[in-house]
Image 1 (tube, rainbow, N blue to C red):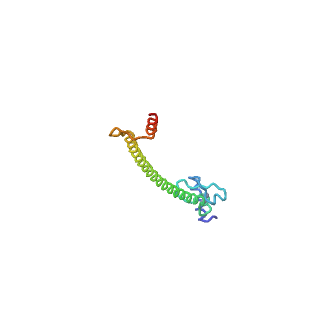
Image 2 (tube, rainbow, N blue to C red):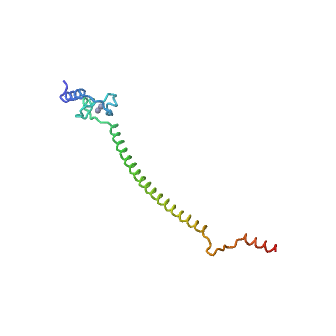
Image 3 (cartoon, rainbow, N blue to C red):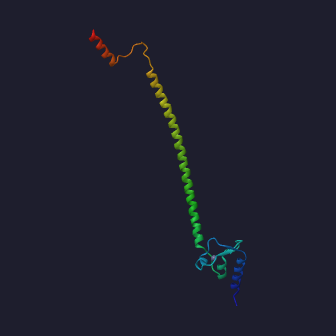
Length: 146
Ligand SMILES: [Zn+2]
Ligand SMILES: [Zn+2]
């Protein structure tokens, strides 16, 4: 004669099999004994059918490691987001600096151009021009000829 506890276990087992949902991550025992790990579809019971029948605690180290992996992923994503935000603000600052410097350079080169142009086109007010080396040679030639 089966004990009352054993009867209850079988009752639970059949209750789960009435409305089964195959576990995405089989519990450790089902994995070890190569059983299909089935939970009740409405999630009202935590053990899987096999563990309920055997009166064992149902646990999944793969699920736990999956949880851990998920936590690690969340942390990694947070870190990357933070890094991207930081890099983006650095990029924006660098771009603003670049644009400012380009404007400054443009203004400076315009000023230089203006200065050069005014120097090149400056005509002497008294109409004379500075003697050049060429003038000196010409003068010497003329004086020899005479
Ligand atoms: Zn199981
Ligand atoms: Zn189980």
